[in-house]
Length: 103
Image 1 (cartoon, rainbow, N blue to C red):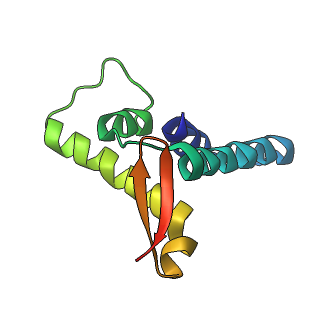
Image 2 (image 1 turned 135 degrees about the vertical axis):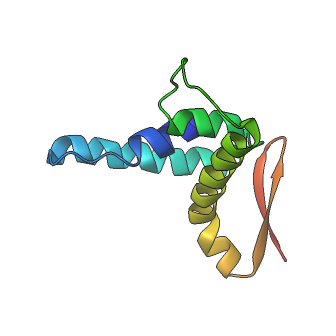
Image 3 (image 1 turned 30 degrees about the horizontal axis):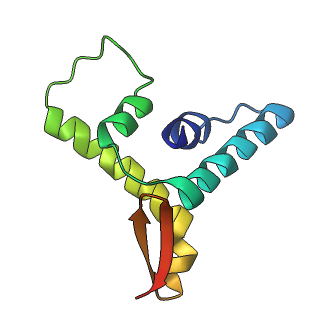
């Protein structure tokens, strides 16, 4: 859910103020999911999300495909926790979600 909301909806704008407001809310929802509930990173899921969940997608290199999903996920996760890290904390992902601890 976080990947879909952050990547698919988060990148879309269309010039319709009402729709753009809803997209902004969905992006905020993705940040909330990541900040409160993310327990693991599944790079292939993020990679598939970025490519529209195309079931017929031809992946030439699984490692590169996975690495692209990991890069997308980490870029978005960094934006969510930027303030915490800038304040000298580190983020640990647990079975119950992320926790912020002094570095």
